[in-house]
Length: 541
Image (cartoon, rainbow, N blue to C red; front, top):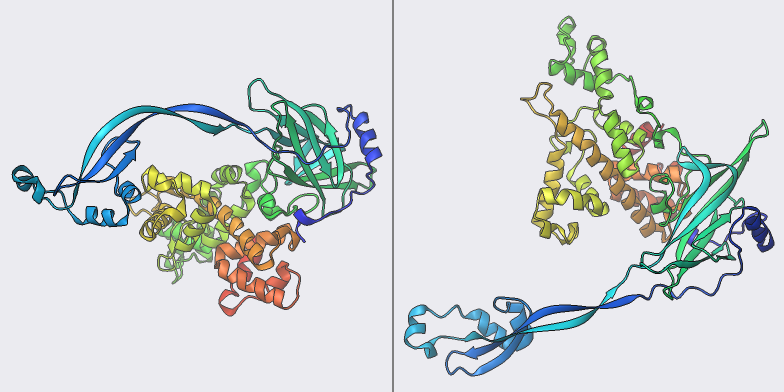
């Protein structure tokens, strides 16, 4: 069942305790919330001046008036405007006849075919239009807690801060209201501090809104809270608190948690889904025969003392080649770490995941693979570019102006025609290919650096697409059926093998009546998709 549809009881919380706790924490007085809010109802009228142009459509033969056309722009009426004003028959005649030849027009205009346009008048006018004003809002944050491994850790009993925000000058938030797992509360102020009690692992529902002096309210917002009390052997204790809501303004949630309505593991995410505090903690010193082979082939490493110059028949480094390339190999695999950290901050995709994906896909060599179908550090394909643009619209808006004029980008990826979509996908794939024979290392390093963000944004698109595939197959939010870590494994399936492989495996797992976790799903891939299992397990080990 979806988190949004669950009605779960808070452990040990009653209305009297809630009121007492609010007094203890020196908050505004709390009482039963009113009925559900009226929601925003704020408009103003503004006067817009314009010019109305009245045109007549006349027949050349006898100057008979065929129809009148009124437009609000300079220049001739458009064919669409003629169609609307004059009807289909007139429109067909208008479109079928070209402009009258000048020699006929000068000698005998009555012989001109079809119709002509005559500007009758232009009149300045004004009209009032309704303009929607920005509504009131409520933001959520936690007081006195720190972020630890993708979750919030509170050493004192946690307090959720609800902060009303009124954007209209001269108006103010007069009350913040809500219900925490069915228990109502209301604070006579823009600031409302709500103590939180422990929940079970599935969490609790919060709905909330603000009333404004304007006379209306904000929209009705919701959140899903999980509060887990933990006590150590030495007697110390604390609370892990996770908040999923569009109105959350604390530190970013664990990646994709809000999109999936899935809480991260209690106590924080596993290492492979983490972003370290210090970039130094992202460093690795692994041996990569393919990377070392490219460093040798591009004369970055001198392995002339090795048999066959340190390379085997496939161009990968031999044992001797690996030893010769070790310092440069370690330096190169850590070259992108700062950029990975920046991309993680930009997209909230875990930095460790990005780095492990690069290691598995390309061993950090940003070239072209599989006869040109897989390109760059993360092996971007045309299908991957499609995911990035379709499921990450913010990224599409950023990239599209590099390929098309702004007005062509305004309608989003799906507004482009097939040829335009092919072109922009090709442009994205081309952008991550950093091979350059004329560059000192055989690699255009700035181009390789740029591509790091592209792959992070593509992963974010895969995260969103995975959520849609889950919902399509189960009719539930992903977090209602599958744990957070397994959802990220499903996302890697989507990234590596495509939504088809994921959807077929989901269907087979459900048909067998099995729980939708990684263990069961990975046993139900089709033959074509089986290879993705090792891919996912290597990255997430």
